[in-house]
Image 1 (cartoon, one colour):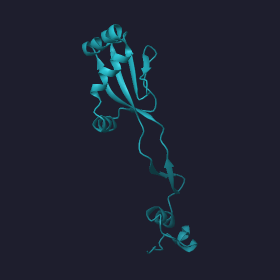
Image 2 (cartoon, one colour):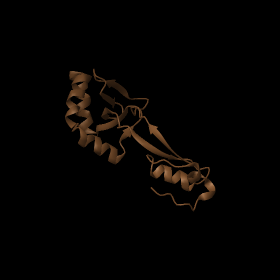
Image 3 (cartoon, helix red, strand yellow):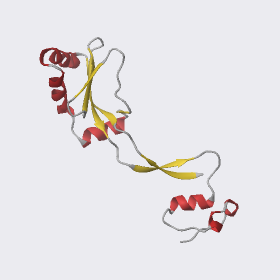
Image 4 (cartoon, helix red, strand yellow):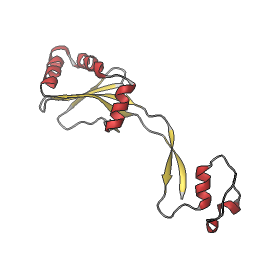
Length: 146
């Protein structure tokens, strides 16, 4: 059985920048010296808008929740658009940005049985009217015309 489902995504998080080692040490020192908000503002320089979003989507750096371990500290900017996650113990810093994907219909396929010819026709031509005769499962060889 084939059905169309309107997928309504929640806000997700994309990775803007992840630093470790000496690069992260410099940001961790900035946090100690100037504070968390200064670090967020500084790391926002790595956010190139759509380019950053596309790279994160392409490389799989998209998360349903802010990825953070038990030793991580996380803070949001004032608008809640960015989240800074860091661990001084493990020497890394990560800046994430809130991301809301476009709403798109998603085709969901149930695996109980294959779609009938009528169901396939309805899925392929959602704006077309079909009679009950067209949709009968036992008429799988029946061609549907426009």
